[in-house]
Length: 241
Image (cartoon, rainbow, N blue to C red; front, side, top):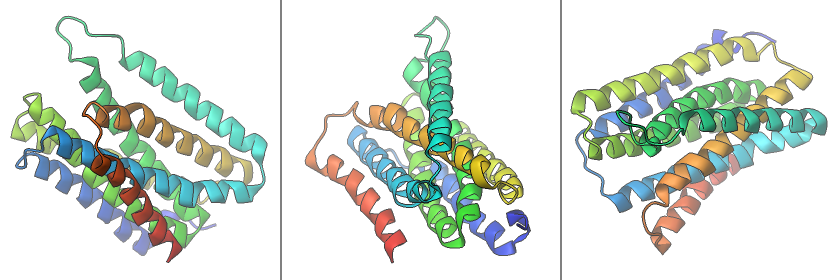
């Protein structure tokens, strides 16, 4: 299979989530989201991620009919994420950030890296899957950068720090995606299944253990809950069209 990174249209599509990430971070520097608005953004982004994984990636894995390799990838992904969570949540120590904020920063950076990895895997699975993942990724990273920047702003982060955060996230995303696009074309059979399963497990872990945990720090309302499903159905229907 030819290297995916050699296709100009794929590289052009990559610009969408990169620009969306920087736009979300930049907007967080000038727009002060309240707790409910941040929770709503996080619910929506979580729905987008779930839809991309459940609607596009998991069906591709099921179609591979390789349950042993799927299980292996998921187990490795969960173990890795548990290890990262344990390493980044050592409790509040003098002179350090609260664990909820430092953990959130690390989780968002890991999310950006995994999203980039998934982009290459998605295009390796098929052009349509890749386009849907790119759309979902752009929406997710915009709202994720907006939400994260808003939280850091409340904690006292300056405008320059927020712009720096958005540039860093965009760079992590772009670097991971380019690396994935370069190597994804050479992955076949079990290797591709294991890599995709690992990435799917890591994304689901980040959503449930970081993004939604942060979102639920604000009292739930019917509208906040509905935003999760709005994000989910928006991406799911995009893939069904």
